[in-house]
Amino acid sequence: MIVTTVKIDGMMCGMCEAHVNDVIRRTFPVKKVKTSYKKGIAELVTTEVPDIEKLRAAIVGTGYRVLEISHKPYRKKSIFSAFCK
Image (cartoon, rainbow, N blue to C red):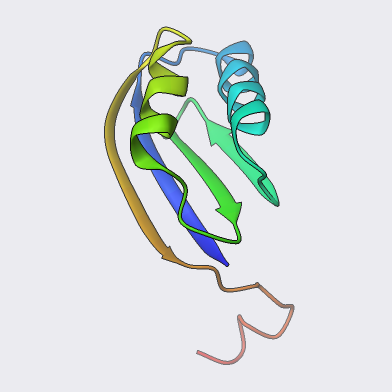
């Protein structure tokens, strides 16, 4: 699985987060999506790397600006991860 992080400009509140989450869920088969207007990011977990241009277009279509998109392998957190560093 892959974690895609999208840096987004223009989000100001929880409703902004909801708009971004909704468009991502409608556009991609995500396992998980989490958005933070305070951090200015959205993180989505998918089985494959999503189409970058499609992702960018979906978010821009909601009125926000995409600054950067990056990917990394998904690593499931466990209760023991804090002790195993």
